[in-house]
Structures are given as structure tokens and as C-alpha cells.
Image (cartoon, rainbow, N blue to C red):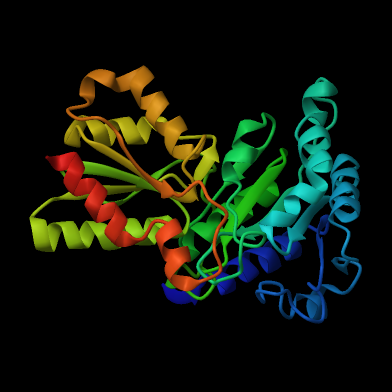
Length: 325
């Protein structure tokens, strides 16, 4: 395998799918000659031209609405939101149009649309450019929600998202783009809706996704070296569909569960995972479920405050130690 960055893996997936299917096109702000603010689309315009790599004005409601219409009429568009926070500008187009059209038409109209957006904190971008919105999209039926953490998963899941006949919210984290990982040379896809055990363990289960997966793996290493605690780490990879069966299978071994995510704790994915476990596998629990999540505050700019508001590896370690008592 080759080692690619998260950015390179995404770019490779886009290029391969555009070569495979002429109906695939991309639109967004500064994605053409500039190559995107996070460089994911860099160079694609030189191969595919401005008809398929469309620079748009700063009007998310307009170009996401245009992408919905294109998807309904046979194209497979990808709309790139420069920051996830801007999804609120085009909420009607996403939640009232893209997510509902197939159901409201009795299945006659498909919406094979992918909306790529990056989210999360860690760069001091402040409260309006650091939010994590996966729970909002998970709450609205009709969309799939994919949140890959590694270059391998990013490429395989993006290819699957582009081929899907349903709208997919494909969420990246701004601090994952320069991370590296092994990616096969050959063609591959990853089915949407399957969690992945990234690290086996026996004493407790840690469920994470996106950048928080990397923190969970760091925490698991610390727990083993310093406390002789073996943590199994599961990457959800998507929240719709949500693979609770993989979580429960792990819980049957460990009997303790910690869920961590960067998004605010209130009404987050951690609460949903915990409730589904309570409904389906309550008798497997030897301790209350632990949740390690972002504070319910606007995300600060100052680095020390931001690091306190967003869960770090040491927060996961502390939570796991409490869970093991």
C-alpha cells in the first residue's frame, strides 16, 4: 500500500469517480483554479474543466439548491461547503428538499447528491467556524451521514457516497487533512453503515469517529501502558446508518462503554448510541455508560480554552478510569 494524506485520498476518490462517470461534477467556492481552501480539489479543473469543476459565488443556498436540482435530473453532483457552519445558510435546500424528495415522490425521484463539508475545532477559528453538526443531519430522515477518520476510509466511503442514490452528508474534519495512512493502489469501496474495530481490547469499549477516533486510539495506548487497561476502539464511520450491532458485539466482551465525540454533549451522537445500547443490550452493562464530549458552550478562540472545551485524549483517559472503578 501507499501512504497518502487524507487530502490526497479524497482527491483521488473524486478523480477516479469523475473518470468513471461523466455525470459526476463538483461545485463550490474557490474549488477550481484555487483548488479549495483545504486543497482537496487542487488540479482537478485541469483534467475535467470548468464545466465539471464549477466555482460558485458565496451563496450556499443557491449552489446547494442547484445541486439538488441537478441530482433530481440525472447528474451526480458534489457540493462543497467551505465550512460546515455555512450549512445553516442552506438548511432548507438540504433538509426540506434533498432529504425529503425521494420519499415525497414515492421513490420516483432520486437525489444522488453528496455534500462535502469540513467541521470541528482545534485551529482557533472561533465559535462561528468550529462547530460540529453531525447530530443535526442525523436527526433528519432521508440522508446518510458519513464521518471518516482515516485516509483509507475517506477514499472508500467517498466513492460509495458518490455512487449512492440517496443524498449523503460527507463530513470531514479540518485537522484530519494532513494526517497520513495506508491506501491501496487498487480500486475499492467501503459500504456505508458499517462500523470498524480499529483496536481490539477486553476491558472496555470506546466508541468514536472523525478526529476523535485518533484521540481515542491515543487514550487506549495510554490506558494500556500506564494502567494495564485494554480498550477496544470502534470507529462508527457513519451515523446514518448507525451500526449499533458492532458496538453491542464489543460490549458483550468488555461490558463497559465510553462514547466520545467533539460535538457538544447535549443531544449528541453519544446520547443516541447510549440509548440504543440501553434498549438492546442493557444486561451487558456492568457500569453506567460514560460520555466524553464537547462542552455545551460556544467554542473559544484562545487555545487553552478551546482545548478545555473540546475533549482531548486525557479527558478520555480520565473518563475510562472512572468507568473502570
